[in-house]
Image (cartoon, rainbow, N blue to C red; front, side):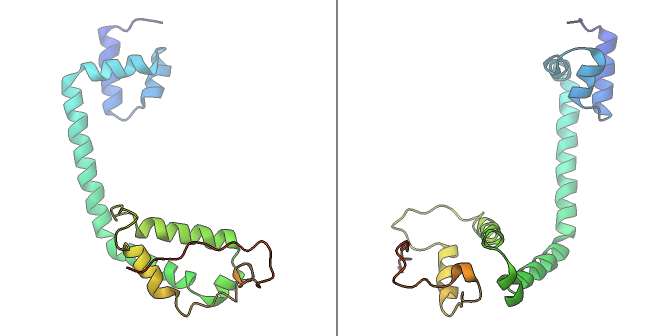
Length: 162
């Protein structure tokens, strides 16, 4: 492995600041990515600039996301309405329904703190309990109620009301 000169190290730092990737720099200078990382970390001024740039980028991204909040909420409303369409539900496969439900559950519960099994229901369980009454799954063949004579019927756990 070739040893880098001071001039090469300065070029690596300059190219890194201008957006070159560590992998590209390693390939260009014939050294490992670890060597490039060491060169970049050895320059404390660069480390501070990178940290500052990351902070600026974070603020910029958060501001952009905040500016798009209404657009995102409108899109989510449209997607939820489409997911609730009876014709679309009837035409969907079980895999599609499970994937959509998994995504909704994942996002709905993302900010909930885990609770012990004997604690009161969390927001998701409360929402499911509230909406389970009167839901007709007969339009979805795979989810139709099975007859009592089906030998492979397995009962799932009941949702405990607290």
